[in-house]
Length: 74
Image 1: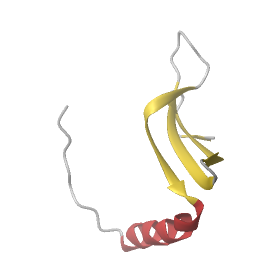
Image 2 (image 1 turned 45 degrees about the vertical axis):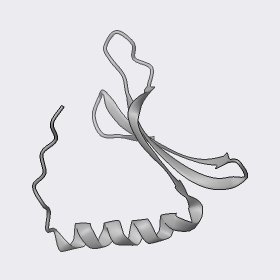
Image 3 (image 1 turned 60 degrees about the vertical axis):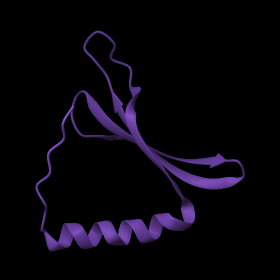
Image 4 (image 1 turned 90 degrees about the vertical axis):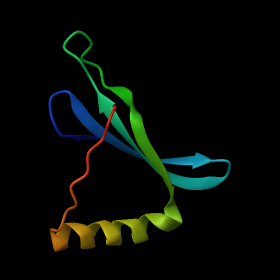
């Protein structure tokens, strides 16, 4: 688990879905009323064979340091 604040973290685990090895990344949260980590709505599951390629591309984005501005509407 990677904690990014007192109330937000990311859970990363290996899972097997229908015979396929996957990596699951799920946003987790907790509140002052319930201090146990609970899964949030956001997450992604990636086949293991694609993880290395995705990490390489993510590294390129971070190293380039060029970010687009986007906005999300509820």
